[in-house]
Length: 106
Image 1 (cartoon, rainbow, N blue to C red):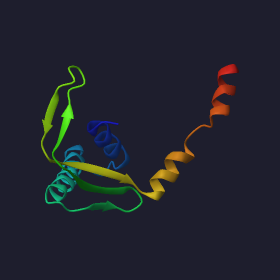
Image 2 (cartoon, rainbow, N blue to C red):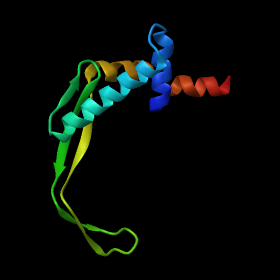
Image 3 (cartoon, rainbow, N blue to C red):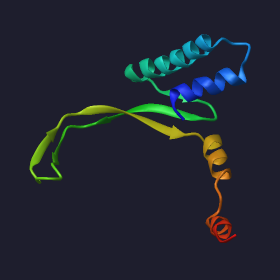
Image 4 (cartoon, rainbow, N blue to C red):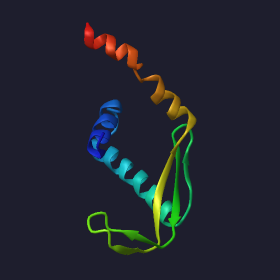
């Protein structure tokens, strides 16, 4: 789902809100999550998951094409860990492999 699809879904589910208001709300939420991560803070959305920042030290890597050594600077990367409720809901929606094979034969 893209950001514009999310906005459209929320606008359809909340007809009392203008489309511009929904777009502003979604943008504000994403901005606040981004700003909090930039400050090094943890963002937890109960039932959904937690966003954190992980720090990667500088290291020497390899160019996979040439095999030459490459210096990789230290960096911070965003990390997401799904919450228990999200994991359970995602796994509940999965179709077992056996059922999938049976559907193909039918």
